Length: 238
Image (cartoon, rainbow, N blue to C red; front, side, top):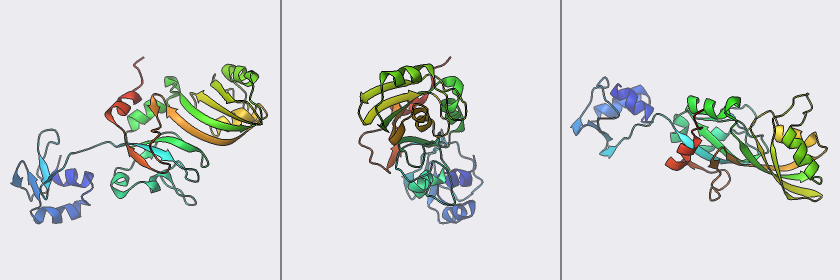
């Protein structure tokens, strides 16, 4: 890999800006000042420093975001703020994207990455990666609803959902539930309850597969995944 690409990838500026940085003698490769942007470096073997600080090459980024309501799960939008707008410039430099979607008014766990292969594995219908939600429902949720969800319900467009696991936490005029689904159809949780004559008034995603929302992560905040969390994302081999 060329040195200028290495530094540009690590958010030290455009190729042109990196050339200026190199001319300033701020960059060393294996302890020697390097000014040639075409110099080849091996991220796994060579030590690159800028102003004396080591630069660790990173190709992919993996972030846990506690998505707030009012923000859309997209990389850009002409009307509303996006989840990418919540990130700092360093994270935005990696061009991450949301893995799956949360509705604009839904909060909770959202994974952001630029690793397309991992995103495909997590979103593939064949993988049956479960997403757990907490919801408040306008209406009394019953065991009949649980049995219906277990069989799969028919949405307003005629789509038959896969079986889902509904746990009733509180059954009242405003019920509280947890629901695990393995799909991600448009407004699916809301439409599933609508098929049973009930309305979702609050929705929060708690987990995706084995990745759980950090209870200490404040709404609207994000952080890199830990090594254990990253390992948990890898679906079991079939």
